Length: 199
Image 1 (tube, rainbow, N blue to C red):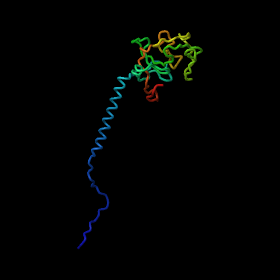
Image 2 (image 1 turned 120 degrees about the vertical axis):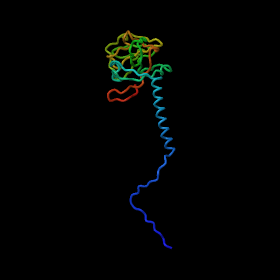
Image 3 (image 1 turned 90 degrees about the horizontal axis):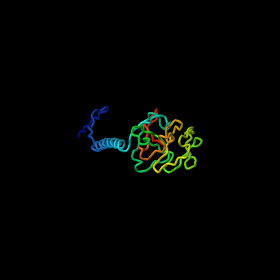
Image 4 (image 1 turned 180 degrees about the vertical axis):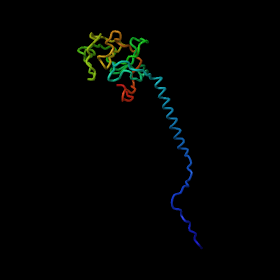
């Protein structure tokens, strides 16, 4: 019996098996798209229901925040809790709806006695330890004398202490909790900085 040899082709071949689309791949792609759309939708819901965008006006919060910089405000947090010392809050002075939003840092809490002596803040006659980047205050304003805050009032200062209209001013004084819109949450890019948490 003669054996027939089949010559093997050497070299390139352009014939390839057609690949079928795997249903698992399609399912994974679909889930990624749906997940992405859901995440974007959820982010919008959070921004518009919990948050609010506003801009910083003036240089009173430098070098934490800058003039014209946009911030995201958490409007819900103070419905569940009260502002803490060091929080950066957004408020309307005396609830004036015609005013722009003020952005300041909480220094004094309800019931505390606040005084500014020799450029430093005293809470209940004890000097408040603060970051070195905050300048000593040249003008104590109405806090030259001891101020006792009411049970719903907060004493606020700008981080740029010598260029800030804040609780040292008679037309602002103690800020009532009802006039606080929320906590400054995130800042938008300023210069080369990216989005960041406000501390």
